[in-house]
Image 1 (cartoon, rainbow, N blue to C red):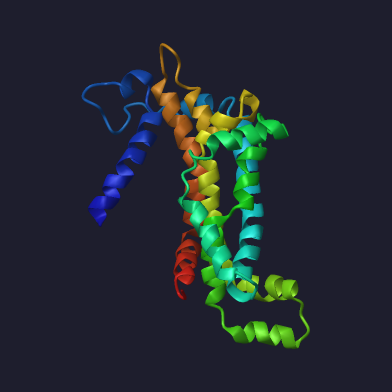
Image 2: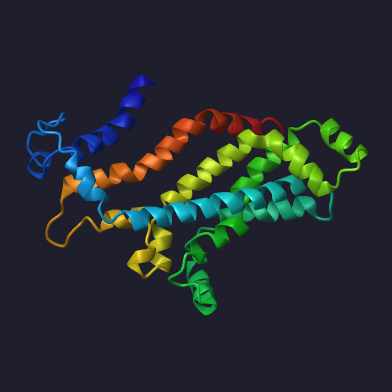
Length: 259
């Protein structure tokens, strides 16, 4: 287990090491792991001009997490605790959409967004995600199914409406699952490279993963600055995981308690 941890951590440690080296030392043979000269100025140079890309990534990640959690929680609660016609069929159809490769509907999706005037806007990067939260709905449905029926019945006896029961009684019970879905959604949005490349034309709207490509020149690439920018890019999801890892594990466990 420790060996695997070292294997997976080594590329990240090498990236941090390269981000602190002069350019000529990064390409030195044989390579050195510990920099002979620590150039903290690499981070200053790499961060110069990254703020707009960072803010775009934060904006999109926040929209994805906020709206997806709301809609996924509503759908998950409905499939878990409410009775309606064709509930099982609807849930099966929802899950089946996850098996369709995104490449299949990419062209029709692009044509639709073009007709709607959404190309070169941020709408294609969050609206479809929050309106079809398949994975989030599945996890939260499982979490809601693990809650004792007595809580819901007591709320009904007190005269609480369905939405009040959902919002004030049931939703606080699945906080670990919400944290797990939120963390996964944040990382998926933050690391998305394909979407911005397809739907965005303006540089001012691009995100951090796309910004990394700007460090690669046509004839020359400053590898140390690219590694510094990559290190800055992974910091937000890394910090999020370190803070939320306890809730992440609890949420995944909670979602598997009851089938």
